Image (cartoon, rainbow, N blue to C red; front, top):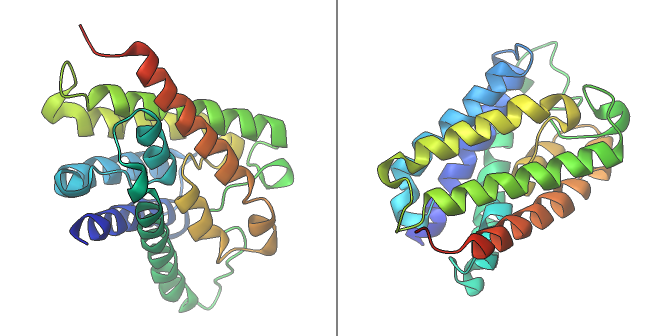
Length: 223
């Protein structure tokens, strides 16, 4: 249960960073969200990573399973904990924001494509962005956390910075998911379109996570 509680708390902070940066504090061309998410993941990995591994993301859980670094029987409990943490964060901010007379949920920092992409990118563009950047992100996680030749105590910093870079690159494309729990949490409180487009932000990140896991196996042990 401690491991699941750690995953719930870590995902809570990740989604809180998204909403805090995008909806509450304002989002300066994506910079606020990118750095808020990267820093939140870095600090939570330092804080509770030793307990649960610090996934905070179903795509990471799937990727590390494919890489042979995580027990498959724990996938469902981890994903449920991650979803719970994300949804609690989205609910937390929704309750706070509902107190503002002019508040409208609208997109609620949800991920999307087509007319719901900040840059007007298509479904294909969003799909490619999500699958490729998730694969690279999971590969980075798998490599820097290896017992031999990994980044050691610096691994959370590398992971947090990698996630920041991924957001800086892809926020204009899809508002950046790379994480089905993050997309699900915000979509539940947004306008209807967010739930209608949510399927892509499960399929692409999970596929990308699996690809990242396969790549880690391909590269094998560090020399």
